[in-house]
Amino acid sequence: EPEVTQTPSHQVTQMGQEVILRCVPISNHLYFYWYRQILGQKVEFLVSFYNNEISEKSEIFDDQFSVERPDGSNFTLKIRSTKLEDSAMYFCASRRANEKLFFGSGTQLSVL
Amino acid sequence: QQQVKQSPQSLIVQKGGISIINCAYENTAFDYFPWYQQFPGKGPALLIAIRPDVSEKKEGRFTISFNKSAKQFSLHIMDSQPGDSATYFCAARKGSGGSNYKLTFGKGTLLTVNP
Image (cartoon, rainbow over all chains, first blue to last red):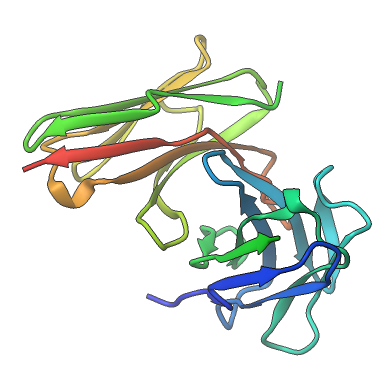
């Protein structure tokens, strides 16, 4: 089965630093998403992206967050100035129209 | 009103037994209810999903029961196997999807099936 690929699997950063989490969605998918899961808590929606623009974002996705599809294959999540509370597992997901959502294995972000 | 409440938090079942996980929601605009299975180190994977126009959906050993009036739905795993040991999340989504696929997740249930 095709997979959504996320790199790195673990990222450690200092508070205030910028991080970029990278995702390669499944090749013929058109809709892209970021979710996150703080340890011990539920998976939360961050943002959806289609046709090179954000289609919906949650209240978590503030000005510190941005997403980009810089080329035909990558989809990135940038956090400009990380906070301790940004520590979480970040999941990228993608899908085709009217089909199921595929999640990547996640990037564990630790902000020290 | 956006919450999805899931119980139990953890569940231990003997091999061959039935695992039952329950979820409740408040927002009547939700119209798609998937269950996800997550193994350690992996992302959630869609297991089975239901829309509120049916009361039950079965796929192999996995069944969703849906009670629209009570705003509850549950996952039943028949003949539970050690390989079913994972975290299970219920979720809900409103709208037809389109570019938006904002899932609201429950907190998850850690299922352990003992051999």
